[in-house]
Amino acid sequence: MSLDILIFGAHADDAEIGMAGTIAKHAAAGLKVGICDLTRAEMSSNGTVERRAAEAEAASAVLGLSARTNLGLPDRGLYITPENVAAVTAEIRRHAPKIVFAPYWEDRHPDHVMCSRLVEEAVFNAKLRRYMPELPPVRVDQLCFYFINDLGRADLIVDITGYYNIKEKALGCYSSQFEQGAAGADVVSTPLNQGYIERVKARDSLLGQRSLIPFAEGFAVKSPYKIELF
Image 1 (tube, rainbow, N blue to C red):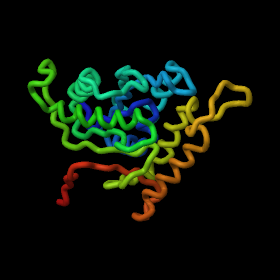
Image 2 (image 1 turned 60 degrees about the horizontal axis):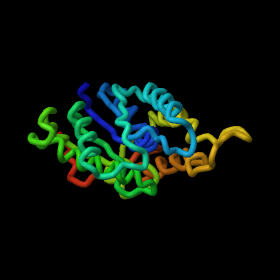
Image 3 (image 1 turned 30 degrees about the horizontal axis):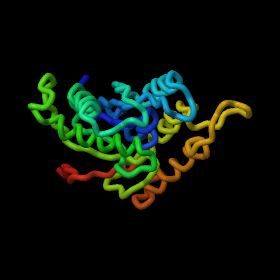
Image 4 (image 1 turned 180 degrees about the vertical axis):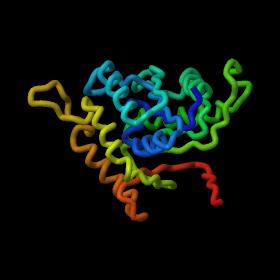
């Protein structure tokens, strides 16, 4: 399936944390939006692979995604190898998106950093006609980076005020990650279940403050972003 926008994350819930409102807004506008999770998050402290897959499916329905895939690469094994770069490149070529999103290149979680690097390598390779010639080359118009745990300079913001309830509902699908659980439950305390969603909401509010927007999501770019004024 061809997509207008393809978002990569190391784990299911990464894209939702960083840009669920932007995803929902563009899907509602009729664009074809997809997410590719690189791993099955098998190393997560809480939740099982099966439960996290079900949570991702539920969140996808909330957001109105056209596609969601999982490459099954090893959790905590996202290294810059020819095999990993090829897997991400093939995903880009299969969907031929105009815009690709990846995690911001600085983050407390090493998998997010490596996902960012893998996607950047793959976007470059995707246009090379002699690389993986069995799939037609694809030139991505723009690569943007979304914030997960650490906030950098936002070069672009998207007003998601009208879609914030959808972002909260999508994040709520990941109860294995964001809920502490009942007393005695087999749940490990992590930064994600210690008020994390409230901090994401505060960040999104802060990102919109200078533009008098109640809630916004921010994005960084490494190359100039073209806009049409007329």
